[in-house]
Image 1 (cartoon, rainbow, N blue to C red):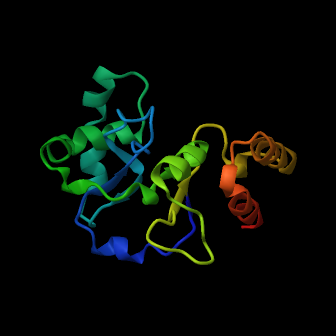
Image 2: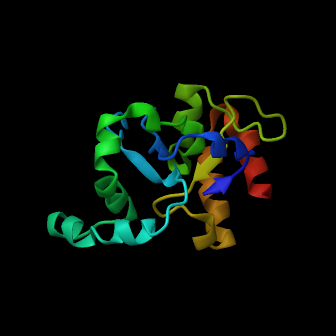
Length: 164
């Protein structure tokens, strides 16, 4: 995750506020569950232990699972029965979907002059995580996207991100 805009106001959100995993773009409408990449939790004594205590229950249903599966299982009642946990997707924008997010949702990456549609948190997922790539791979990744026409009006924003 890369925070590119102040998100202090998230401390005012309710306990168990989550962003979803970019459900806002075409092709990802079924991504409706909270994403553990960005969540607001109030500190609670022994909460990590309580969550990890359900490990056997989750493992009995899925042999390959993540922290997100544990979160979904532990907070299942709240997630299913209360839709007040959602925060705007600007707090969890997957980089591999950024082109679609900007185009379809009219979000932007105007970091120097942000507005209410400026993406606050970029979520690097899958294999395109800059800290796991060499400089050559990063340049190749952005070069391909830049010149393939996938960036549209975002070219200047991506060049700015390369400088971060």
